Image 1 (cartoon, rainbow, N blue to C red):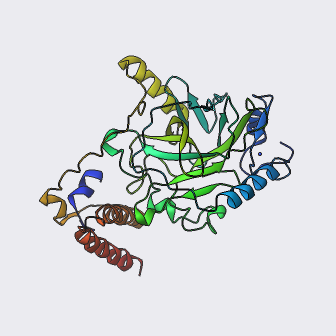
Image 2 (image 1 turned 120 degrees about the horizontal axis):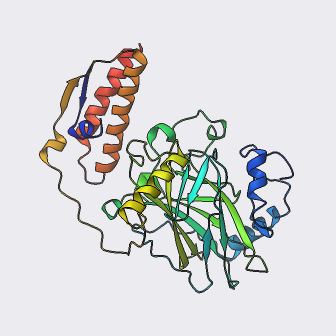
Image 3 (image 1 turned 90 degrees about the horizontal axis):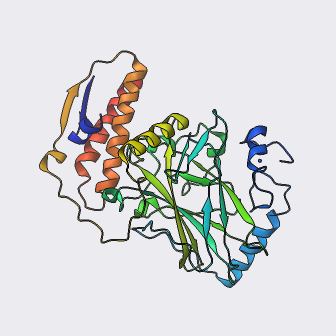
Length: 358
């Protein structure tokens, strides 16, 4: 099989009723740790009276603030601050050895398999006098990639294997984060190279010390190819904001979406202890966007190699990977107008895939 591609390819070659996501044991765990948890509008439990709270909240917001919430900033600092209202974000450590997610307090990092809901607890010490929202924005931890937006890989973005994705609106598909809150807003436009974020209303209870628990999940893994995460480290920045986007508190959480959460957690904790290094992704201050390196001429040369494979299905997998890689390069180079060579090669790969399926 003869392939055409660029050098970049060579380098990358819910308690009263049964939840439809969580097992009974997981439901019992989530609601047994805290005596006074205010579950804010989670659609996994449709009979809960708290559903009306968010409906009224959103109605008031639409009347008082008709303009839409702004998208996330291009470059986000992850310097943590509680702000004037004492904003706090907590992950309750999961117990057991066969859980779909685990939390490392030492690394401030949660490890999970894809599409595994995990709880995040929010609270404030002082009740705000106006409506607030919680924005969850995935970012790359390394300063080298701080300006890059986090998107789903093309394979997962356009997959319809899961029934709940079949009728998903197009603007939601590129988001790697989902929230179970029925009032969730998915902001940002991938086609405009905007940073994507997930926003939920934060209806603070009369007693501000009461915890508001929300369920989140990730729908792409750290190992997915570009334009996915592509083995880069990521974190989620939780910000407490008003309807104009003004920030009143900020917290960060390191995240790894993998196939073996417990194994990866133990390995990272061991490495961190041996090396004495601080957790990745902490305390990155806002700084000037780095200048992008000029691509070498080799980046635009077309290369071809012959790879021996066993099995037609493996051939299709390799072609699909090549196609996705070139599609990712097209997205990265569109703004600079240099996507032409990648588009030509992608079309050649499309033709090869079609010839082998006819």
